[in-house]
Length: 399
Ligand code: GTR
Image (cartoon, rainbow, N blue to C red; front, side, top):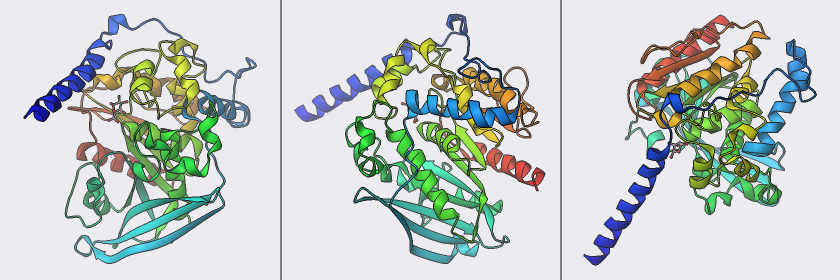
């Protein structure tokens, strides 16, 4: 009994602390400070970027490096070896409509290895190779159940298969456990030098790195059109999907669902979650240098619109939920708007309106797509349904 009371007391304390954090955050537009965003099209030597060549040769590498050094950490690209083994296969999964492949991707470096368990369903009735969606799963593994005994709208595999796409998932814990102590037990063992560098990779970087290893595998799988892979993530996973697409230009489409602070939302608005909060709660997500920006957003040499810009010219879909003010819906929309000029260098015209569309009024037929869904912080069938429409639109157009 006494233990129960202590446990309940502790739970009340934890709930109170996190409720307090959320309560203390600013949710009033009138209290958003005035701010000036860094100019994505001005180089560090103050030259204006006028065309895509200059963007690609000069400014894009600069911006990528600023994000590596100040926020997400370095992205190691080489490793000693990689192997792929199919550990389970079912040609007639989902009542015959899909082939299931469970693939163990093992990556070796520094005499250590990391094992990535990929779950993949490929539609049977569609001509191969097929385009695919890959989810970086930050929730329970039951959400991506290969047996389909458990079905979850977080990863609605049947719906995606019925739409003619392959659907895949990896779990973040294979790469870096989502814990401030144990996050080192994964990819970071392959790159120990990252642990001591102030701009070293941490958990979000490790998750993005893992998505790229799946891409390495897809390039060898004849069922998959590796030129048409959409990387998808929700919330902390959506921060990782953005970072994966920024670092690895093989991802054809980026989907960042409710990614909020240090995801798709602008930091300088200081609305909802802020950098000091995210660094205090999740010190293992971003590099050491990022801690310098606690309560000091304006000192950042970047803001998140520049992360969106790193995905250009590839199509990008960001979302919010109406009850999720913690993730700053307006700041997310503004981030997309401020990246439009980089897409314009490629002659791509964003169809986003000047101000955010209404709830459940998705803007899909645009290189920069957006919706704010009615409801809570989550990844739902509504969201996925729009991502499928977005992919349909993009791929047909680009044929
Ligand atoms: C919250 C965190 C957010 C977001 C979210 C999630 O606690 O403050 O940045 O990542 O978790 O991943 O659901």
